[in-house]
Amino acid sequence: QVQLVESGGGLVQAGGSLRLSCTGSERTVNTYAIAWFRQAPGKEREFVTIISFNGGSTYYADSVKGRFTISRDNAKNTVFLQMNSLKPDDAAVYYCAAERGIYYYYRDYTKYTYWGQGTQVTVSS
Image 1 (cartoon, one colour):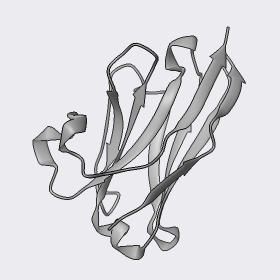
Image 2 (cartoon, rainbow, N blue to C red):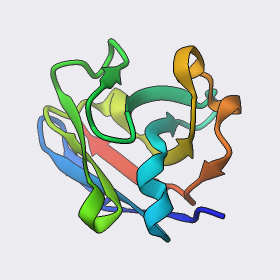
Image 3 (spheres, helix red, strand yellow):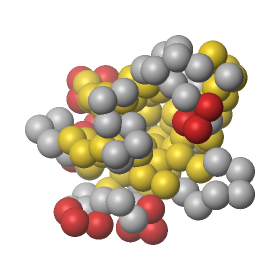
Image 4 (cartoon, one colour):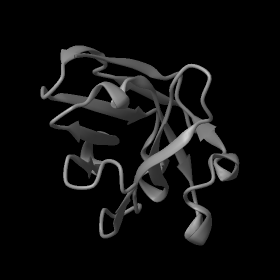
């Protein structure tokens, strides 16, 4: 069973940057695609970005394209989310999720088996 732990959240001013990390409990996490979702109070969990198991493919939500970058270091069992030019609308709890063979359903949070506990991102205006 894969366990995921997020870190790196915090409080930042609008226009600032944060880097989130998602570390897997074992090397098998390197055979999984890893996605980031976020959930703001009163809103549904929404897709942010995903990276394939080998880092060869990435996809982003339109709302973060050009500002966020996902990457992975499989030697460290870790996926990173670099968030630049943060806006108040980016404030949410950010979760990483792992799945194999997600293919066309990668935007659907119900398709993921393994989740981290979440890390809070707060953006002040």
